[in-house]
Image (cartoon, rainbow, N blue to C red):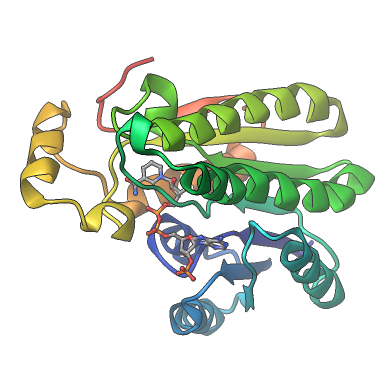
Length: 245
Ligand SMILES: NC(=O)c1ccc[n+]([C@@H]2O[C@H](COP(=O)([O-])OP(=O)(O)OC[C@H]3O[C@@H](n4cnc5c(N)ncnc54)[C@H](OP(=O)(O)O)[C@@H]3O)[C@@H](O)[C@H]2O)c1
């Protein structure tokens, strides 16, 4: 039976790697993006050449009306979301006393509200079908608390609690909910950091390197598969051993 997967923020980085890791031709893939239309279309083209159904949909997940429109488009095209990867996220670095009210609200609007909006609308289909899988993107900083990333860490802590609460509530409906907590992964999100800071970070990781997007994609691909059929409510750390919870 065909299934539909929505990966938020899959024009670039971890979301893109996750979309490109898919090879099941029974999948409809929705590539969501906010701004980078060309990159999203490129992902769609690659997937289509492999025989998967794929479409790109622009929606800023921090805006509920835009998320509603995206889900309407998915419903009209494919009938509903069976697998949701809440991947889109933003990060910034600031001393905690310098985090402005605007920064705080913006990061919560994307990382937490956006995840909530997509989950709320995806559940309509999943609960009625008594089947579904959700993977949320947390972070090592949600687990340990990142210095100069207090606002980002707070959003990731919220994502982890939400993941566990949903898993408890939705297990009886045959819906699995997990989170992946990456360590530093080489994407645009961290590419702008100074090289000495990236080198210093890598030197603290037992595997002595920053991770690659496909190393997170592989974990997400496993979690959405039937191989993970008895895994729910877990925060899977993929961080080169940097934090061993
Ligand atoms: N990279 C890391 O080291 C790392 C570590 C831990 C956790 N994570 C988490 O992993 C997830 C992906 O991170 P990444 O490193 O792949 O990020 P990235 O390279 O910066 O890519 C972000 C993606 O999210 C999309 N996006 C951003 N804001 C959006 C919005 N309001 N609505 C819809 N889409 C939006 C972007 O779309 P456009 O291209 O259209 O702008 C892009 O596709 C995030 O949740 C992040 O917090 C990353």
